[in-house]
Image (cartoon, rainbow, N blue to C red):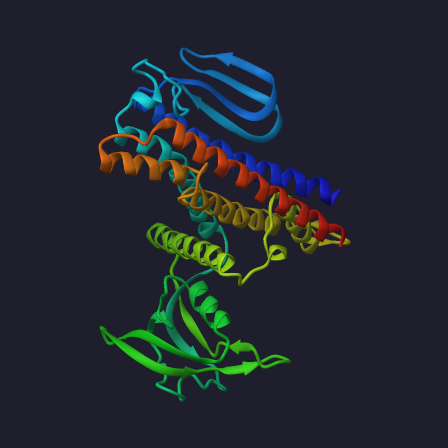
Amino acid sequence: MTKVLSILFALLIFETIIVIHEFGHFIVARKNGVKVNEFSIGMGPALFKKQGKQTLFAVRAFPFGGYCSMEGEESGSGAVSETAFCNKRVGQRIAIVSAGVAMNLLLAFVLQVVSTSVSGDITSTTVSSFYDDAVSNSKGTPLQKDDKIVSVNGMRIFTQMDIIYQFRNDPDGVYDMVVRRGGEEVELENVTFTLRGEEGTSIYIDFTVYPVKRTPLTVVSESFRQMLTNGRLIYISLFDMVRGKYSLKDISGPVGVVDQIDEVIDSRTDAETGIDWKELSLDMLFLAILLSTNIGLFNLLPLPALDGGRLIFLLIELVRRKPIAPKYEGMVHLVGMAVLLCFMLVVTVSDITKLFG
């Protein structure tokens, strides 16, 4: 039963993210006078069709993906109509291509506002007190009460999560920090924390931070900072993957996400009372925020077949005052799509192997 529920949650989250992404392309294309031939939810044979004034709207049998098919979208299509994508000004095409990513990030932000509004306390990055066994207020250049932490080891701090990440990412217990103290930024060298755990690699965070009163303004502000934190951590993870810090077993695709959701459901299920739906809903909300941000920012990477790759060609056209030859652009995107599909296949096989490993 939990596996079926996990699959349903995964389908709902992924399909919502993809439909919102394609809707971004759709609405901006229509605003710029581009004819959208079809807007489809899902793939495969159509279960429902409705012909609009310009666009065929369809719901298809398999809830995996969707698409927004624009006239003259493909390189070298030869479309001559003024409503064709390829015949619009380069600025208009940049707006249309960027709209999918923008909608994914907007979705993530809206969900983050909801999450911040209903879950947990809003916390600052300002030190409120130290535990009795604290050493960070006595060793190195010590922290003080009311210090607002600005950076840790050179990384700008937006949220409490950033502080925790930096402490865990550099587990030697000694950090260079910048704090705002008395209205000025002060550099602190070798702020020291106690190491705990069996191998002495767990950082003991020996201070607390002030809570923030929940108001509409603080909710929006905290949500924006959390988006900055999530986006930066996603790019850091991608760069770490390229540098070889993570192996293939550390990367998950849709199959891996289903398995992770299954583990979350198990953790929220009690033998007597059943599923704690409130906590599970918050967990799924958090997952949807991360996935929408992840998919949006991944699509922005300057790689062939992704929106970021298409933007690169459009920016080159903007500088050169003429487009790259369509046959070359099409070839690059074709190769990029093949590589991307192969990568997805490898990740999926790896996920399946981990399930039965």
